[in-house]
Image (cartoon, rainbow, N blue to C red):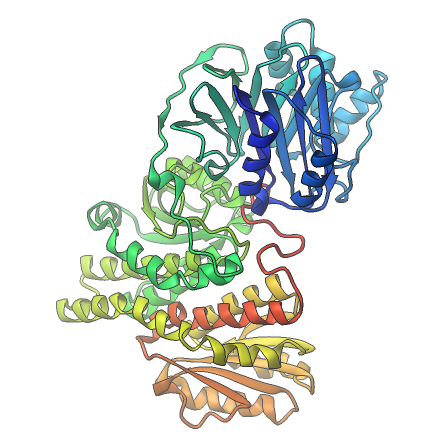
Length: 598
């Protein structure tokens, strides 16, 4: 979740580190800090709050040097305070450490250190790493790091400075992403390629249990026994850097307006031959893996596979899958969905699945992510960089490409006729245009948001594929606006949820399937006659007989495809509800973009 960056070279380390942290702040914005080797000492500046606080402190007390490490934090242990901010130093500032991940045995290590007279100053799990390296140091920094890392349990990426080596940077990876970058007489470490792309011509993606020793012109990789490892650099291509989104005042709004292009470019680049090889494999179970919005995109696939191909699909929230009894094996195909490709629970679930012999098809937006490297095949979503915490264009592209996979499966196994396949593909190709039509209704959706912003609670309701859209809408609204929101199948209203439908409560209904229009109309009436207010997002063919306080008409599409269209309306509603309530839409409280801890 946190972002780490390291620099060594000819330039001003502070400037390079702050520039990197600007690109990484979406990974955590509870606090930030840097440590710089000044030539004689390791000097730290760190502040709770947004990166702007650190910039202010550095303007008053500039730090100069050619080697340093930086960190932007999403808190897991300890509140967001100056003391709990990274970097952490050992006694007398001999070593400085930044950490992304979680040390699960930190309490045992803390007791071990205290018994040897070490005084810990923070409430974090990370501080113990600096002291452990210091304790094991006998003249060789690499040896001390390797010994300390072998004591650590959990997941981590580390950036480390030693006061004994002025222009040397160390990095460690175990189950958390870490990249080495090379520029002109300068080198970098970073959690995410976006933090260093501007400066690097070549990059290398570290494997687990790797330690690197980095100077301005050379990087050496080792295992934990100090044996040298090969390190393969590749050109930092445009695809790795990702397309930047035109900015319209906030990242979230800008990225919603990018949905049509993201869908269009993702479908245009669909690797039909490669996916076909996977789909023709010897399996009899298809299972989905994902978290949050990626999981909801998977539910769209599950519904489409049932409705179009007549095939059941098992859906797995990755964190829950890890606690279940193992039943998957060689005859299971897993489809793992993750925007960043670094989602910790999803990666752990994929590793478990592959250990059991399952094949894995990944849907991802990062070409060289851990997930892309683990999977047997990867389908890229061509969304460019997504900087807002809330997934918008990435969710829409994931859902669209999963629908394409559904159609290819149905075609391969004769679940649909050639004519049906042609018609489905034509309609899929129109989704970008239809989402553009929704975006043109932005003003009307903003008006709906004005009503919802003062709600005591909001319930998102739908049937079939509309329930998939309702779940994603509820997540968007709660994460960016902090309005209490839950999603339910409309038919479940009478089984408990109707008790909550009173004055001050709103229900947001999704109605895109004309076959279910009368059922949806009845559900809307059940809500309204109890005093709650109803807002309906309805396809033109499915709006008949529905009476509500407000109704927005959406373009018609195949019902199984409808969440791709209706979710854009929900994204815009969530955005405007958050703006009206005075929330930071791009950086919601307590959340981070890339969830790299379990």
